[in-house]
Length: 177
Ligand SMILES: [Zn+2]
Image (cartoon, rainbow, N blue to C red; front, side, top):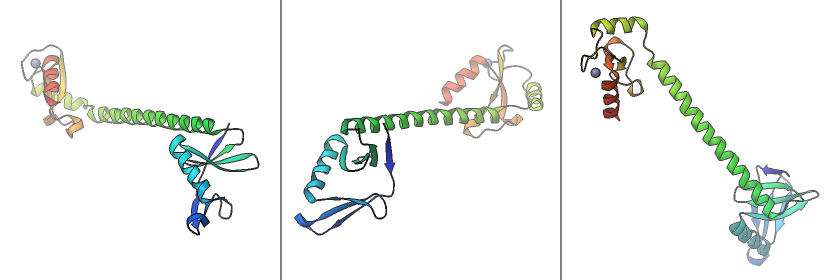
């Protein structure tokens, strides 16, 4: 059960009205010829089902689909081609979803790498802030906080780091969003 995309096709029309001939080239020199009425039938099949049988070549059939031209094994009918195309699109979109998630994760890792505070900066800040929350002064549940978040361009220098307790830090995060 195979479906293969055909790249580099081209459509040529010669003649006019009922004497017109449509040629769909699938190689430089090989093509399927369609009369105007066959072309019209193919177009309406495409509109209705998303796939239209154009012709065959020994053991394979040539399809015009709303996702391009495809060769299919000769035993596949229109419904099967349609299903395989649908499955292809579905796989592609779930693959894109996975890539999107992977990129978000990669960005998170990069952000937290850039957020890591060097030990000498921690010591400096601890001494400067007197080992207590700069907001409320308690000495419990303390955290190093980026005054300007890394995601917004803040650095890991002492000027941009302060000590906050968990409550004050959460209150701050809530107000930043
Ligand atoms: Zn506090």
